[in-house]
Length: 174
Image 1 (cartoon, rainbow, N blue to C red):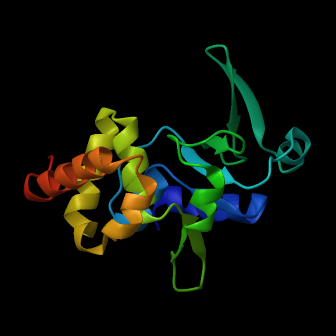
Image 2: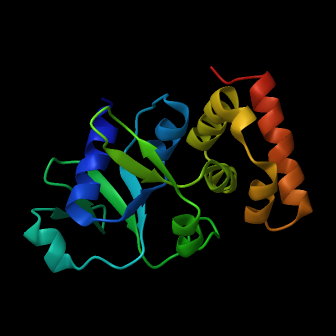
C-alpha cells in the first residue's frame, strides 16, 4: 500500500472523521502518486491541541509557523475552520467519496472528484497542473459535469475547467 495512504488510514483511526483533499485525494481517485510535503484533510469539528498531544502528534515551529506532525513523522495540514479554495468544508464533507484501500475493508474519505478538480484548478500551482493532468488521464470519463458545475462560481469558470480538462486528457503532462 502507498505509504501516504497507510498514513491516511492511521490518521483516520487516530482522529476519526477526516476527508483528505490534497495528494492523497489525487492518489485515491487516480491510483497514481506523486511526492507530497504533507497530508491535507478536512474535519467537521476542530481538533484540540490536547487531543493531538494525547495521541502523540507533535507541534513543531518551522519558518515562523507552527506545523503538526503525526506520531509517524508525517506533516499534516488540517482544515477545520477555513474554506478550501472557496469551497466550504461542509460541502467537501457532504459530497466526499469513501474509497476502499485494501482487501481488509479499510477505506479513506476523499474530496469528491469534481470538488478536487475545482480546488486544484483554483490553486493553480505547478503541482496542481500535474494533478489535473493525472486526473484527466485516469478519471476523465468518471467526471460528473453537472456536479462539477455546482462547485464553480460561474459559467466562465466552468467552461475554463472543462476546456483545461479536455486539453490535459489529450495532452498529458510528462
